[in-house]
Length: 65
Image (cartoon, rainbow, N blue to C red; front, top):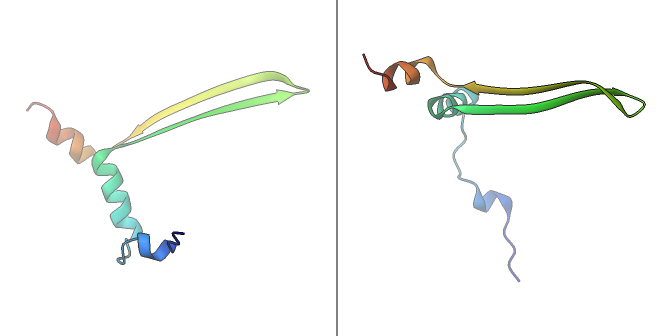
């Protein structure tokens, strides 16, 4: 039997929210979602969202100058 406690699997260091956002924006984040408004099981409005969130510095550094 193998018992693994959660704190043993996680690194002992804590990451600040600012550092986490910096890491995510450095590589880019894609956000997707769907929203459906319906009444009595009849779909009235459907909205699909796809967004790419990336740091401007990363975009400027990767393109030709």
